Length: 257
Ligand SMILES: [Zn+2]
Image (cartoon, rainbow, N blue to C red; front, side):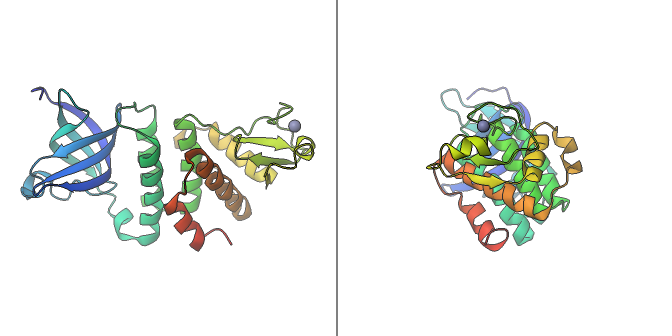
């Protein structure tokens, strides 16, 4: 193990037992991306890590790197924000779990940060400060898919490449991650295409182009929110080629018939 320690801001996404006294923790770290660390003796020594390695906590970490593995050794953790409400309030916990599941299944250790840490922190803060939960989840997914390299296209038609025209009707083709105009839709009826209202396209397109600190200014009608969530859910399942269980659980209760 290297003797020199490093520091970073981090968010706890997973924590599991390792042997009788250690914990293995998965973080998303500023400047690093996802990272797995061992907190040796964390289950025995209550002082060093007590109440700090809880899910969704925001921390400042000191750690050392192992020479021949990706695993870090956590030396110390300073709690910056516990986001306690995300663990105590069931709807908020379920929403935070969506963020956790999507991040864990679509990232690997040490792939780089590239804005992921800021996006997670913005989302957890937004949920904890009681911004509208389902709108925050839609915005998170939209930005997250872009982070992992699959920015959906709302600016031009998939087939004819004509730029978005507010006089036209559009649908969304999940397999291509793009809008498609009504003229082009008629030529490929075999593909399943979700109809989209103009309000939904406008919201998603402008959210894509806004930085995180401006997203709360955007407003979305309830039908458009349902449409956006259904689109993102379907697109996410296509991208990941699996069910997104936390979103399905939420959707069964909240926004889908
Ligand atoms: Zn077209």
